[in-house]
Length: 334
Ligand code: TYD
Image (tube, rainbow, N blue to C red; front, side, top):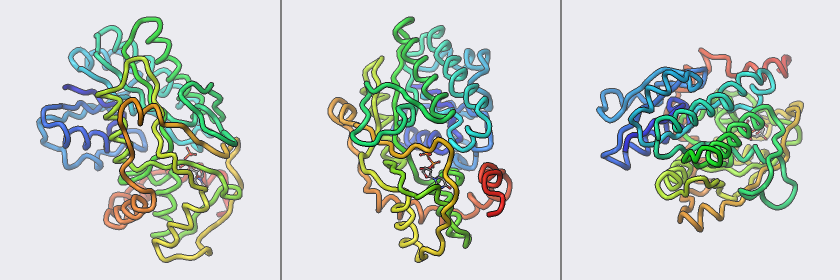
């Protein structure tokens, strides 16, 4: 099988490329990535010289490029996206461009070049916040951030292209993920890298917001299941259904790293901050036989260890990029 994986130099895309090349010796991958601030070829250094892997620098909005790359691929897995809520509050247009228009460009290429399947990687955030119960695949979209709205736009285009043009697409909505190569602007890697450098962890609002967390390897196996066994035109929620309050995640990290509560800094809440995400993943489990393997606590220890052992990877990012731009703007005195 020949795959085009977009956004493959990012956190989840690079983990998935490793997963595919390790698990399927006869598969080959083209990695298309725009190398924005979060795209990092260091994530794929070990693949240099691998005859089953090719990197192309480019934008999913570039229809000519996408058209030429998809002439003879079997499958597209679309990881390319602007994903950080805080950045979407500062610069929403970048999100609309990549997450909506980029997805449409890919769908058009699938249609024209008769690609056999496209898997759209998306988020639980499209459903908005839920006080009790869980969102299912049928729940209406009620996005609250420009990020969530732009992902919802892309996902709706997937649906429309399937219904209107019979384009073979599957959409996945995942809970929050974490693990190796996670860009250190997101909550867990930001907390780990701050604690490792003697800084405090900024906790938005009261820290009682609830998220479900999935380890990278479990997310890869879930996408693998949808890619190989998923039904065309269907939507699958990906989730561990293991809910954690932000503050409890931080307490665990403090424990793992031998720190105390003085490393916590409560800061002004994010505007429009969703209180709780919770999705029902029984369709993926029952229909495709998927189950997560990793317990949250164990995976968190693995992740901390990875950051401890790969200091040069994240220190280079911290020193050379503006990943805390939002934070500096929002909290100039901290
Ligand atoms: P994040 O990793 O940005 O993912 P998302 O907002 O898409 O769920 O944030 C996870 C949670 O952590 C979210 O409730 C916001 C909160 N958070 C903080 O409390 N402090 C931080 O510095 C960051 C980045 C996030």
